[in-house]
Figure (cartoon, rainbow, N blue to C red):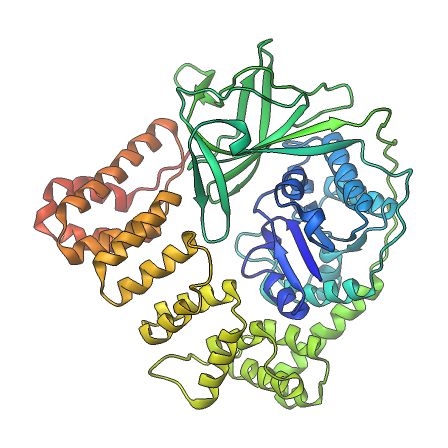
Length: 573
């Protein structure tokens, strides 16, 4: 069984529910196509770009928190309603089991109105809702601080328990018969980079996101052919994120797209339709992107073209004779069953923290996995994992990985039991977990085990992840020339990564290659000048120590003033 998750940062961050849910569902495959900051409009892109409906059995969506937070200033209620209706209808027509997680980032009356739209449409299409916000607040009785420092995400000890409820609901879910009278009003289509332009293509991304894109300079324009459909939005890659973007067609109609997501340097922009009479926009000529900004000196709006890397355009086509039904909001909902399950596991976790012997009385593997995910005591976590291994064997790579990490397993600190678990883990050839374990050994400067993990990954495609791991391994082995070679390959895919720049500076310092150090420094100084002109945000946190080291060298005295500026300044809008 394959499960796809499309949502916001809640469904991708390390401190969220995702890793616990993957461990609970194994051997079922769980893949998250979520992007931080996104609203429901992003789902139109994700469903088509990743061909999710043809490749997955169960769809989990999670957008309500950001939708309610951004409405009505960044996305209209009408626009939200139409997107929710069409996305849910498309999943329903594909006869997929659909679970929707309801978060509420800022609790207010307006937010409740938006979330009630989700509840109403969910009932129409037999979507299973899990009231995450209501459950956590009810279980804790608002008596504790449940938020992380950014006030946008729940703390781990509260959100990871939600994974248990998702698994329970998934196990109870069944396919419902398709209701023919409930159909999408529009369908979405994707035009990928290779179909848009004859310009050279390149792969861009990080270890998490991989895309093929065409590079568009500010002097170039994108030409037809375009499908005769309305444009909904587009995904592009750029180290800046304008609040709004415009372009125009042959009739010189201005087309404004609102900022949706910014996960790293990936940005999705969408058309914010205000009402049913708000006509959409078709591309019929070449276009260029323009950033809308405010000039402090002239007190006027100005439009500036900029270069970017285009990944895909998203279109829609209205289906003949279909209209959206009137929005009648149903405010009734029931989450008692989920709440009682949550309270039970929340209470049990607290009891086990006080009396560790209780774990020997538990035989439910899912309960043990979930409780272990929120326990902060390392010794207790290891005891829970040992209990699971006794009950079910070494058949879950997520648990094996956790045991290795918690054991502080390195070449200097190992025993036969952990070594056995280590090689058992390698048998599963789980690429994502292996990358994470590789990074653990690199951090511990354990070259022996890092190389074993890397050699176990040779079967993967030579994408940025492969190059990055190879580069770090060579750096750890003090083979700086080979490390440079692989880090340069990484930069061809993600040239803005401070981590790669930092490693290259360290390698060149070891190799006494002053010319290459100067080139990288000049590149950083150029980025500062651009940042100042365009009033964009740049931070250099990962470079701080290396820049400090360079300041101590006489060879770079002419750069010292600029280096101090790099160290001491973050450039913000």
